Length: 553
Image (tube, rainbow, N blue to C red; front, side, top):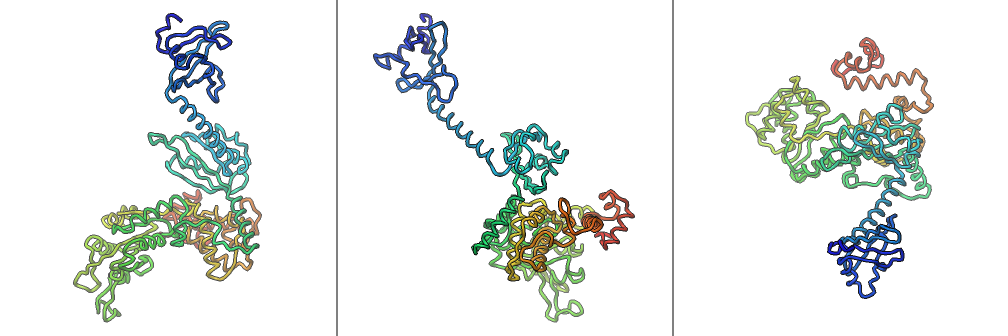
């Protein structure tokens, strides 16, 4: 120990009976601090939660030391002490971290929803026990497998992981799984410090089980004469405005709408027919200051004959044309002065009226039909369309300058099939609404709710609302089930069930629905034939059989 005498780190040699044999000056200073007994072994403790008994810790004269014990000879052990400021706090933090890890693992493993993690390549790295209950497949089967392989093997119909990786945002699917249960899958990307996707966390919720529980809950509340507003909790939008905003996409849209409501920039709302463009317009108007200064006037540009549309929008002077009001008539722009004008189906505006609309947007003034003087108007314009305006510009069907004037703040509302979290609360909302309207007490069984949740809804919210009203009004029984669906919907439900449809009827119903959807999407029978992988004469014959017209033919 002589050569280590002046070394600043404490060294000591201790026999097997914990008696000090020798030590250096640094170690002697520790002994001096301890007092006359010089018994350091009383201060040595095994580091908590460590399996190595030779890793010790000590607190001497207010300082923390990490001590390593090593046998160097028979009956001789070397002690090396390293002063470590805050080692006690570090060890406590380590214990807290271990406890936190245990709690997280318990939550992960015992979650009622299925959870699985995939890396950035789509390979499953971890999953929990709930996935076995939901899918009927042992959880270890998923480990190490790429989601693409699971789709190929039929375990999954679609991969929410692949969509989340592609879009770099949260994505949700509703689908039937391997054993026939309807599940809601939500994939959420986790980003690293550079903003790249590190992993995908997927949550799997068994909607079949959830719908059954909700149906049983409603029955229980009814039997016990309890009153309940809705089995779904209401958020601020349903409470205040009576609208369903459940999915992340719609929450983002309505939060954006709330922020821009008081800006006079033109808003262009895009989306398929029936997605709720009119509802969003009402929301923007009601959250703007213009609700105090003017009205919300709505014009459907596709519902008014072109020869009358100009006078409806801009008004006319007395004697402007035969049959005109002798005092003239203000147009929609004048009626909306100080407020908001909603131009629905704006893509249907004739080119000559597009010029006049452009002038309103640029100059803030209109001119009545037959008038000679322009009039100033203060109107916030919200336009909407289900068509691709940019393609219409390219094809010369819509003015480019007007397109850019309208497209200042574009808002795209996704179709209902892409935001399935909204379907269940919409079902409850419409069922309650029509029960109150017709003073009825109709209920849906959980199998019907399963079908409504998984159906694609080509007509979106409007179609869902119309179907629910139809069922409430036409079904005699108070309990409405899947067998009460109209025939055209039952054709979509034939998989996994016996139905009253013959095979021929089922095939015809599927053909009719496919052709009806294709006729809305494609421009002519040749495009439809390519999409459906059949011949053009066959398409023409089938369209005639089902009395379906292509929109551009």
